[in-house]
Image (cartoon, rainbow, N blue to C red):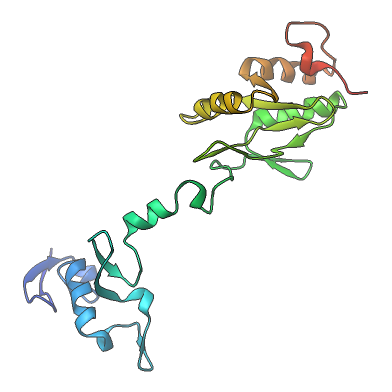
Length: 213
């Protein structure tokens, strides 16, 4: 059963659930913003004669013409544009999460962990996510780098929508660098060999099976 209440700002009547009847005083968010702009002392953010500006609505407009409801220099549209590409605080950092910890390093997939164990089994020195390469408005970070071979390794079990595009762009912009792609079928073979604790010999993709020692 809904309760009929009157908006404290526009005086229009509106229905509200009983559980929200004590807290809800306005029919809409816009009415709330309008009211606290006109009566700042009646807001919970008014303390000791001062307003907390980051919580109070402001009667001004962004340079793009959009009305700003909170104390800010830009509307959220301009702010988002300002923080994209190289201006973003996440520029150069991976956008997907971490999966498992191996040798004190958080890796982003079980395939990467298996490949790292395989490199250790073969006594091949490796560096995880060594460097973020600039692609313009984004960056690309290979999964592994083998210093003695001067080779980057990309381990892929599944391509995210933007991942394949970044990989191709990296190969085009940095054609002087060597990078090998390890796919799910390779990882399955590696896992099988690790389980058997035997070194694989020969094969078409034997480049990453060779030891540094």
